Length: 175
Image (cartoon, rainbow, N blue to C red; front, side, top):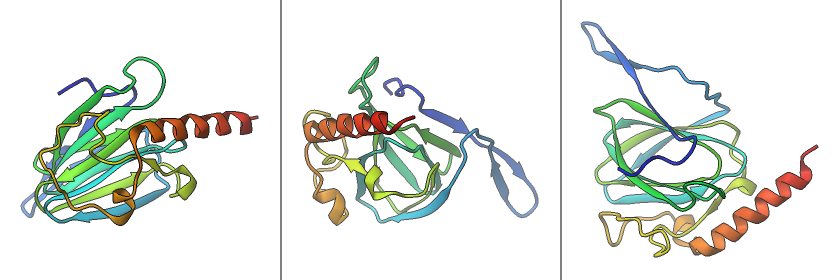
């Protein structure tokens, strides 16, 4: 696995077992404003998405995901891609900071608890097509199932331009 982009955290969850089952436990500095439960069928790919104003967290509740990350922030690691597995069998939470492009592929059925540090805002939804050649992500599929929104995303080059404009807007609005 390539090094994770700056600020990305992969936190192992401890477990407590009793006679009925086990419970995964974790602590984080991440403050949640919203949770979503994302259920994916085998062969589903979601992404690639990036946000300027919020962090995301993923905890796989069942199944496994292949997660792709790429840093679109200027600086060290710009455009470096990481691809790795996050599975329910090894309880972990992935925390993705603003400015890190992310997407995931579900090779089998999966359920993911998706946390957002701020409520969903369509103005903070940027993305690019999952198989943009500029990213060279080695996805294990040629024709995944995509949402209508993800299928309509533009190029990585367009995304970087939109990202820089969004960051400039936020900088101008800052006190």
